[in-house]
Amino acid sequence: MVYELRRADVRVKWLVTCLLATFGLSYLFGAWMVALYAGFTPARVAQTYAGADMRMPMPPDSTVVIEHPMKMSEFAESDTHAVDMPLLIQDTHVHVPMYGVIAGALSLIVLGLGLPKGWQLGLISLLFAAPWLDFAGMWLSKLVSRDFAVVTLVGGWAMGLGYCVVTVVAIRQMWFWHQGGAA
Amino acid sequence: MSRLVRAAVAVAILHITPTVILVKRPEAVTRLAPGADAFFAREAHLSGADAHRLNRAVDWSPEDGVLTFYIGKHGAATVGAFLFIRVDTPHGPLEVAVGFDPAGAIRAVEVTKATVETKPWVLEALRAGLTDAYKGLKPGTAPGGAATVREKVGELPEYMAEQVDKGVSRALAAYGMFS
Image 1 (tube, each protein chain N blue to C red):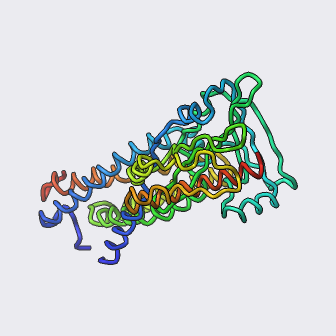
Image 2: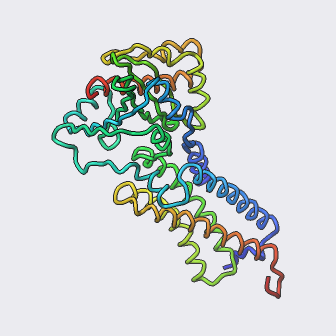
């Protein structure tokens, strides 16, 4: 294949570098947003997507009222950002296409890297699997068990890992590789 | 490729901005049930028939079929009841807190959450006196907050006022049927 980023025109290298820098910036702010709204621990992610554990499997035959005392401090806990089913549907609808576009763009960069075919296949799989895991974790936390929150965390970290590997290898090969020698 | 770019632009435009807290819940509670020093959460797990009745009345069903009313008391006396209602809009969710006095009339309404995008519109509607329009309403009446601020605000704040109306009408229906 003739598409090799390390031998590419400087304009192509600059374009790829700018694209990676832009993705990097958006990932940093993405991480900041996750810290603000969902958190980086399974417990906080579960609280965001699974919500309070008060569901009944089926609606009761007649309305059941349960009353319990609560403290003022518990109202503050309710301020935790919660993603319910309609919002998760909306989030999935708007995020997954964008994640696909990002994974596609990074995969195009991967195709231009001087890496063995197996590594490229693995990286492309990682880039697309990460957002799938991210959203699978959210849906499984909501529908099956809060324990699946860890899948969302794995997906999020996998997204970060995929981006870092592509960026480090691409920058190294584009800007620090000398013809006839290693980078 | 151009289709790909168009899709990316569409996604960016449609992206829902994150929720922002306009009033913290504990702060809202002090206005919805002033003087209360003890609180109780009353969770009504709705039967299918009751959920259907509520849905027919206001075209809305609470998450997981559970309505949560909060009761504020001072000593043995009930100071008020309140609930937090979420309204989903194409610009992201709003949370409207509606407090009732012991006579069953609305004492206060607070918009506790909006989104980064909708916050300025909500604040404009609030500055125009939106929530004053709800005071004293009882179940069975229709909130008309948006109509009262229509002449004073722009199109989007008016739209958000209509969404707040929707939250208040849900609270009125829920309180009237199940409190």
